[in-house]
Image (cartoon, rainbow, N blue to C red):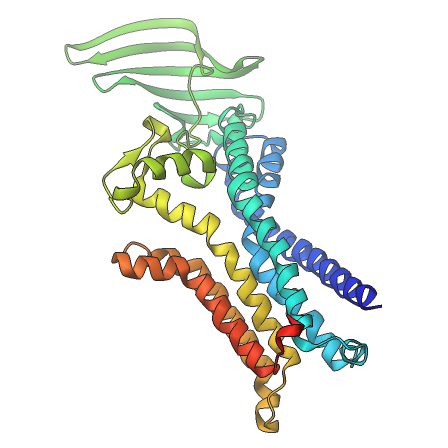
Length: 377
């Protein structure tokens, strides 16, 4: 009978978690999606690229919200059980309060492992995949980025200016500046032209103009009646460098293992070129990915306090609000705790061990309040 009761409780928790996490994740995803619209409006990528890129950001959003949605789930479910007197089913079947809390704590380990899996493996993989996809995608809406009488820098090392343009790609008063290197550039001026789309990308068909090559030695002019200027050779302005949250955990752990004695160094880096990061930043990232999920167990213990009502009736009115505020503070603290690991070694050790210490303190308090017996553990 007890197994059936606990099974129903776990199903209620899992069902509410899936519902709440899905709803909150979608809300945040939609809000974030609005901010990502510059992928189309400023970078010229297609709607398909925008949708796939934003979808690949969902695992990161979900992972960030796990700790909050799990706390919210426990708080709502246990509060509902308590208000509807469903909690009495446990006590009437001989289930001790400490056994009930132990079950909640054990269930929370599943969510700790879930967030660790997302933080260490799934999120870095999908974030890197999203950026690689965006970086290698062509600019489908390039014509929309060319605005009349405005300089456009939609591609690296390329500046465009047109007096007039229309929806069919016809242009008038064209100015193109190509930066070849630090000491050399090319300027093309044409009276008119047309933007042509090919399988390999876009190109300009330019009429009646002049090409000027400029370098340290001077300049060289060449007139033309008609020429083709290829745009496919240029890269879009999408970020090429890899971010820390897009980097696989194995690489970061290996870096930290090599430079563990210099983990707080702000100048030392690990990696090569666009794959290089500060050791201090790597240390903080590994802390966030691996240590923060442990706070889920602390939040489960805080939520479990709902079944231990204070004896003074005055405090009962504010007890639930107090617990929710405490839980919310713990969530905020867990997100900021990595900031404290760069201080003295003694402080660093305290903040690394703080989740375990907090679990022991909360659990000891619960044991005392529930008047435990060793046989109940």
